[in-house]
Image 1 (cartoon, rainbow, N blue to C red):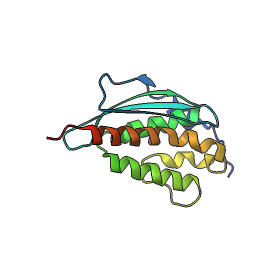
Image 2: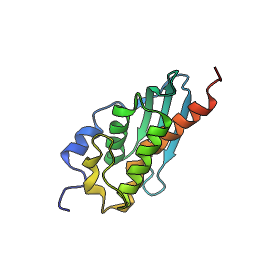
Image 3: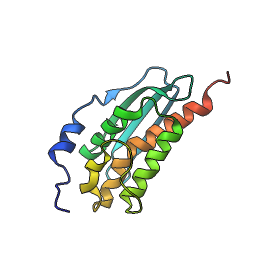
Image 4: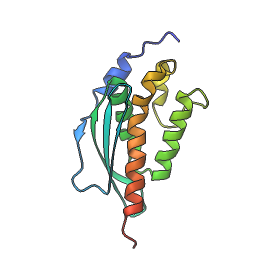
Amino acid sequence: MSATLYNQQILRLAASVPFDTRLPEPHGSSEKRSPVCGSRVTVDVRLDDAGQVAEIGMRVRACALGQAAAALMAEHAVGKSAADLAEARDALTAWLAGSGPVPAWPGLDLFEPALPHSARHPSVRLAFEAATEAAETARTQAPAG
């Protein structure tokens, strides 16, 4: 692959959303950290009555790849269930490992230049892992109604 790892599209996406907007009183939160590079992503969610993400907040301290992945995740997370997020996380993990197609989540093909750089994969996955865990926590802790 001849594409540059930190290309203009990734850098532009990384700078496209505020990464210090946590939710007050979230239904679920999760922080994930990459031991390889130290990137850290915290995701807060609030779910609607149907169990889908209604609001999302994040604090991202990551490289441009982690920031760009967090931006893509947050851009399309509203309206998704914990199961939808888990499916996206698992598809992303498989694709980065070379054992699956490009995930259906919009924009993830932008990370194709990262495929041969396995040390960068954890940073790309962080936001999806944190969002999934936050939504699952919110779903399991929701009051019965």
